[in-house]
Each structure stands twice: as C-alpha cells, then as structure tokens.
Image (cartoon, rainbow, N blue to C red):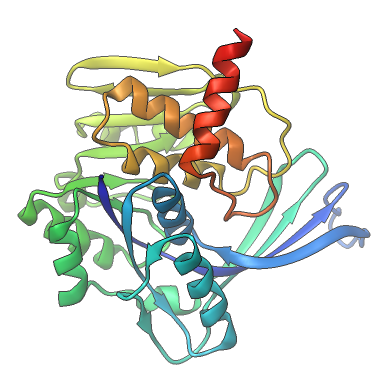
Length: 287
C-alpha cells in the first residue's frame, strides 16, 4: 500500500446551492445549505485515504467548534490527524456557492491555515511516506520546508500549485511532479518545463501525464455534474495514492475519482476504491 502525507489547509465549508448566481446587489433564493470539511489539503488527504493509501494530514485548526467537525470528518475517512496543530483563533472557513450547472464561487478565510508549520513530528511522517502532496493554501515557507524534508528522505514530492502564484526556484528544484489544470499549466509554463512529471487535468477532455518515459492521455468521463467543488482535489489525492502504478493506470483512476466527485455536492465527496472500481467496470461493460 502506498503511504501519503499531505501538508496543507483544512476548512469548515458552508455550501449553498442556488439555481443561479446573484448579480452584484441582488438577492436570490437558495435551494439548500450544508456544512462540512473542506480545504484543498484536507480534501486531497481524504481522497488519498479513500483511494486506499495510508494517509497522514499535517495542518492546523483553531480552538473553536469547527475544529472538531473537520477533524472528525477526516478521521472518519481514514486519515491520520494526529499531526494537526491546534492554535488560538478560528479554523479556516470557506463560503461555497454552487449554481444549477454545478459551477461554483468560493470565498476563503484562512484562519489557522496561516499558521501551518513543519515541525519534527511532521518531518518524521514525511520521511516515512512514499509520497508528499502539497498545495498553496498555506504559507509558502511551510511548503518549501515540507518539500525539503521529503527530498532529504527520498520521498516523492508532488505539488498542486493552487491557488496559482509565482514559485521560488528553491521549491521548483525539490519537485518530482506537478498537478495542474490548463490555466495553471499556462501560468506556470516555465516551471512546468523544469519538473520531471507534469499531470494536467483537462476537464471534460480527461487528463494528460508527461514524464521521462513519454506522454499518456486518458479520456474524460460523461457524468451528471452536481458540483465541481473538490473534483480537482479528489484527482490529486487519488493520483498520489496510486503513484506506484504505471502512469496510464494511475491517471485513469485519478480521473475517475475526479469525475465521481463532481456527481455529489460538497468538496469532501471523494469516492472510495470500491466506487471507482465499480464506475470503471460499468464503463468497460458499456463499451
């Protein structure tokens, strides 16, 4: 079994569903509201664990009631949360609005995520893992520290550079792979060209992986989209969990995980191994 450490953000999400987004100054009536665990780091950790990887999450929560909600949710998905720090103040919060087409608008308040640090316990977990998965919703120094610890231990370093921002050369040199969408790939073209493995999500067109042995593609899946929130995170977590598989197989399974996530509401909707297996088997039977 692959072991994964995710260093990143965790939020309490408030997900409001409406038929259409309001215009500036306009009020619209919503369809539903739900609260649950979010944050790119936590979403990816959840996906990795539900994809079968032994997964440790390194992050920070506040001293409020939201902390217990998000940690219980992660632990319930099989994620080890023993390396999550507790800090005074609020847990990260995200206000997510989803329209009738499944598109979303998101406002994030970082809260405790702004205090994430890589301590000795985190370094130990990283050293023991096969793969380290990172994003950019926590302070960049913590991302660099985690990547450096992984490189020193021989742990594979994967970065999902989202939200996109300029990356320091010291971080780029520590990366084994990046997971980007089309816009991120374009914005970070120079960086992408310096990283051994580049995995690009292409929405309904599937995904592409380029590495030392060439390029592989996997087609998109036609699904009934409910909410695209978290689909990219589910893809990244599943890819990390299956990193030990051949490129084409890990890409296929990651793409299936992302597609299935889009068929359910909320950012924390990553599917299990069994659900992905059934999804792929049904597609194969229908061919």
